[in-house]
Image (cartoon, rainbow, N blue to C red; front, side, top):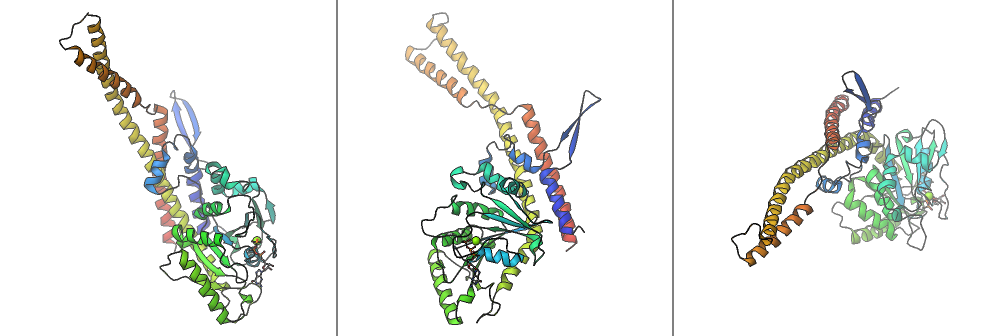
Length: 421
Ligand SMILES: Nc1nc2c(ncn2[C@@H]2O[C@H](COP(=O)(O)OP(=O)(O)OP(=O)(O)O)[C@@H](O)[C@H]2O)c(=O)[nH]1
Ligand SMILES: [Mg+2]
């Protein structure tokens, strides 16, 4: 049965992709020209739309990438090598999906998601499932993502354990401070992914280097940029013998974190174990599950808010381009006037030199006016930028109208969501 959040997601997706939407243009009275309407995603990829995009990005704190959000909540798990990241995913899903062990087990990024049939999907399919990854491929730096895409895959599993049907995990390679060679700039890729995921779980284990530098770098980045997405846990807590040792570990971890970061609001690190239920202190697996559940319940609201941000971005950027173009058109008239004036002076000077029209000014002044008119002609060519043609303007106006209609649809989506809470 379709739930309310399913139907809301469908409506949001329709605005991004404009699926099945067509517009009819009447040409020569009777002939109809039927065209597919461009959704927000397609508009965002257009070269015309990407013109001067950096300026709008800065003004609106938007990264300029318009991509439909994921229906499921996306949770990325990061942390030291062997911290138990893959084991946690296996435990949550209730299946041995990811390989685990004390060696460097996970060497590539893997998406784990629910589906009707258990299967593995390679890189190409993964890019289709997660459009935000596609954007990294298009706009990212090859030096950063290296062979990230070639090695990316998705594990689909039909388990219905816990809330797995509504959550997608990203299992990441373990972080180490040694000379381990990664297949991409691992920290940069993780930072990039943090933008798109809804929750980042950081696992620190008591035996390994609980305080590996790369892990702390990531915690620092998340604290600064996405503090609401960050949760830290002490994994493999069955290896801690008693509460006293736990407190020592807390102290050690907190000290090294607060050294680097400026924590204003206390740091919560919950210990948990997936191997043993009973520990000398509470096993806080329940807190991780609760964090994931609350992330799932906020997902619809987040998707609504992403749609709002993207519609406003498209509308404002089109407005900015059209206003810039209006200015350019006005300026163009002024540039023509300036050029005609300078050319007239120039011709008069030449005629004066040929003694055809004697001007009542001395030679020095004449030379000055000659130089000035040449400079004016040069400047008039330098500031003369080409405005958009009428087709380009029509497209920008169409996109602006589409974003306004989308904002109206967004209001109706909000009504459906908030009226049914
Ligand atoms: N004692 C104990 N061992 C655990 C726990 N969770 C995982 N392990 C063990 O820790 C080792 C590493 O687990 P993984 O899940 O492979 O760790 P990982 O973080 O995915 O490691 P990499 O992929 O190499 O970064 C395995 O031998 C697991 O059996 C736990 O809660 N308690
Ligand atoms: Mg692993």
